[in-house]
Image 1 (cartoon, rainbow, N blue to C red):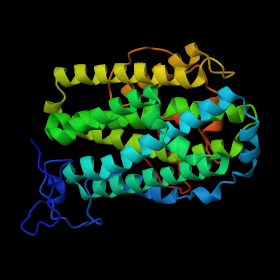
Image 2 (image 1 turned 45 degrees about the horizontal axis):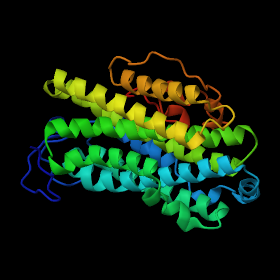
Image 3 (image 1 turned 90 degrees about the horizontal axis):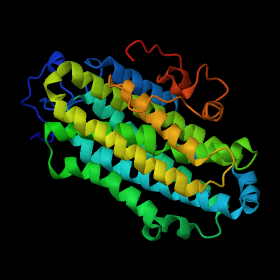
Image 4 (image 1 turned 60 degrees about the vertical axis):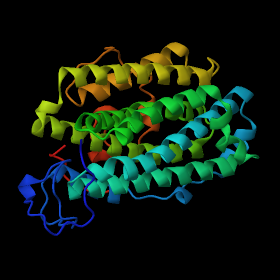
Length: 340
């Protein structure tokens, strides 16, 4: 079992070099002039440099575009928003209530709090999108209660996090880190791809711009948990047993199937550029990429079938595409990221 950290611990004599991702003995004071995990502080500065607000995005044209969407396109748009609303709501609470209480490194605490803020900001972004285009915003917010496919996916995601909440062991903490990697790096992306597909055809450009900002944040979130996992592999190799490896692969396989089912459900084979086969291969590609970034072997060995998505997921000042797995080119600053 692992204990929640104390909010204030004046009896601690823990040195900077003895800090741990979890299981440490921190004072509760953020001494940010002395840090152990430089990658965490670098990531904190990237997040600050990437600060944005939903009202920066002009949704005026989307109001007209939405009225001219086909019924299939409208249904997919509404279901996509409903799913994204759930995941960011869940993640806001999960990070603060379920993950951060066990993290004993101040510099990692810092970026988990920042991530939670960004997840809440994304919820506001979706609210702006819903209120801009919908004549009945409550219908989208209540969809998770009525759509059984959506409820099935939501329940599966929440159950993984509840494993740590119900049984806070070292093993389950590491599994929760992989679950966060899956949420940030796989579950969001069929929805993102759908909204970019609309933008590619000249529709809902404001929505796509909002998603660009959100996805830029998600890159940092993905790198955060990628770095936590890789740090734990160096510091606590005893945790990365064959049993854990098998469980992680099973988690990824289940997540891929869940996301493939969802992506095919919302597109219904009716969205130009997103066939059932493309949706499946894209999700498999994402899973392989996430696995290899934490030193695990890929499962599917497939290529990205919709590389054009890269063009819609980046801003004009970005030098490389999203899938290179680094946040350096998504910062408005000029930091060096050798630690990544």
